[in-house]
Image 1 (cartoon, rainbow, N blue to C red):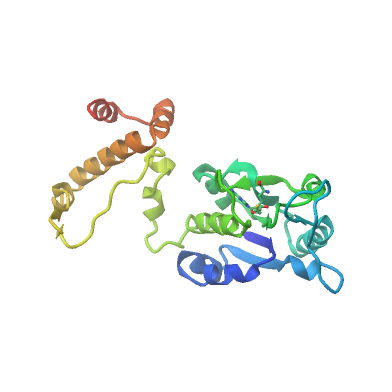
Image 2 (image 1 turned 180 degrees about the vertical axis):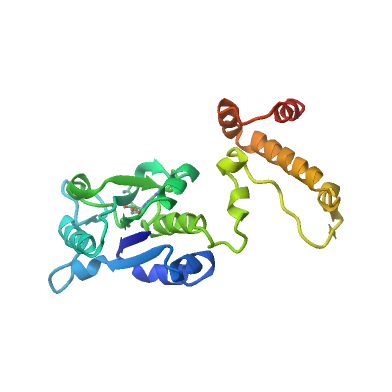
Length: 247
Ligand SMILES: C[S@@+](CC[C@H](N)C(=O)[O-])C[C@H]1O[C@@H](n2cnc3c(N)ncnc32)[C@H](O)[C@@H]1O
């Protein structure tokens, strides 16, 4: 899959693409990331990419024209067109279901906003999807783009060291969309706190039963909405329900 990122700060992506899971996905080409510096498509001595808002008010607005030129260049360079995604607080909030859809697709063109945002006429003419990272305001769309790329990268086959590990992560449908269970490693006792004996039992079925109960308990406590969704989808067994009713 190929993601083209339009940004005023391509240098922000260098450390992200050269470390850990994202590096592996990037280097193998499973997640092909191309960076486009919007300023290269601006005109004039000052290479302006923004201007004051009509109607007054604080801040600057990203100009439609350099964006349109950059987007045309990106589209001309891509074999497949791909949707244009603008990161914005207006958009639908990114979640696991969306990440799964993007990770099974052919990629997209990601537009990172800056300043007060993008001239609305460019959005109306060219943007297919608006995507939000949550109900807060970032200084730019770059962190949101990296969040999407990271989440997509770790779902690609062979990118994680342990192939099955993302299957056990929070929100995964394979585990009924529940939160992940707690994890422990050596030593068996740390500052007087012991590892739960089930995990030291060496008994696979007992360990799995403990993990399931921990997932249920954590999810019921922190995200009851996910329990309700799993129940509605018929994903909770009678023993799950019995455990939950005893909490
Ligand atoms: C300072 S913000 C603009 C905020 C905008 N004036 C508003 O109040 O909704 C600059 C850019 O950061 C990005 N951004 C800010 N918050 C975001 C969020 N929650 N999710 C995704 N992108 C965000 C967008 O690309 C936005 O154009």
